[in-house]
Image 1 (tube, helix red, strand yellow):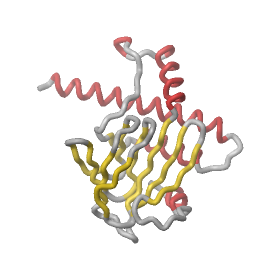
Image 2 (image 1 turned 45 degrees about the horizontal axis):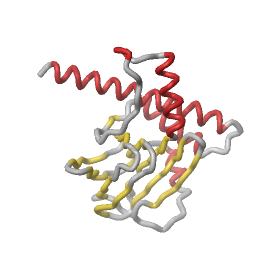
Image 3 (image 1 turned 90 degrees about the horizontal axis):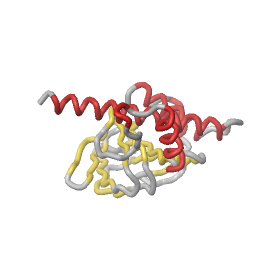
Image 4 (image 1 turned 30 degrees about the vertical axis):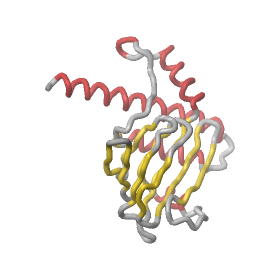
Length: 195
């Protein structure tokens, strides 16, 4: 992703070769950085709340029920709470690790943001905004990449106004994920209509 993120990964102390883990927390978000330095298969992982999983470096093969796909840098997934992932790391090596991040988003912050949008900016068709997980990959556009970088910078910092910045950055991320989801739904509807 960038040099700053590389410097954060350098803080990892563990000697685990598979899914070595570094964690940072704010009230709104839990930032998990994972690094795997050894080829591995059938690693199981799930989170207790809605999560944004984003690839940073390398390749994973993700398995969900009957579906499997390659997961590559600049791709993300939004997963519902307790959705189990089965992960393969076919290319991970000591000198070329596979890296990803998982942002666990506070349900309270999601609900506050949804309420704000539903009251002030209703969706077309007057349906309520909602953020739900999916096992469909998102390609990170520039805005989503910037949101992720901002969350990482805030969560890993010791800034004076970290709490306020975290609230704003998390709300911005949620709104952009909703816009990405709405755009994807619209494109799928157009695609189906053209068939």
